[in-house]
Length: 170
Image: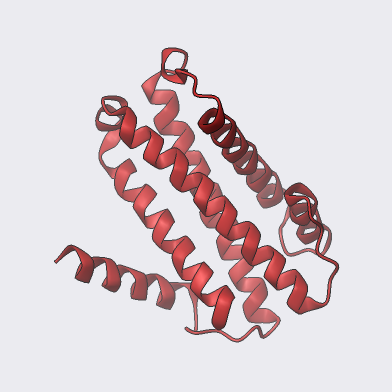
C-alpha cells in the first residue's frame, strides 16, 4: 500500500511479529516476567490503535463517513462486508482488551494476583491471532479495491519486515 496506510500496515506486522516472538518463549517465560506480559499487553493495544487508524483511512479513501467511535468503525467495515462477522467479533474482543489495558495504565491494579500465567499466555495468543486475521482481511479489501500497494501481497510485506528485523538484530 502507499503512503500512510502502507507505513501503518508495515508497523502493524512488526508489532504482531514482536508479540509472536514473546509467545515463542512459552508460558513459563511469560509467567515468570510480568514486564514481558505488560509489553505484550501494550503491543496488543498499539496494534489495535494502528489497525483502527488504517480502517479510518481506508473508509475515508472509499468515501464512507468515518465514525468517531472505534466500535462503530468496526461495525461499518462489518456492514460493508470487509470484515466477516467472526473477524468483527474478534476485533471487538481485542478492542475490549486494549481498553482494559488503557484503564489499568491510568489506575494501576495488580491484576497478576487474579490471573493465572497460562490464561495470560493463551489470551495473548488468541488476541494476536485475531489481529492477524483482521489485518489480512483488511489487506485483501485494500487490494481488491485498488488502494495502491507497496508490495503485491501480505506475504511480500511480511518478508520485507522479517528482513528488516533480521538486519536490526544483526
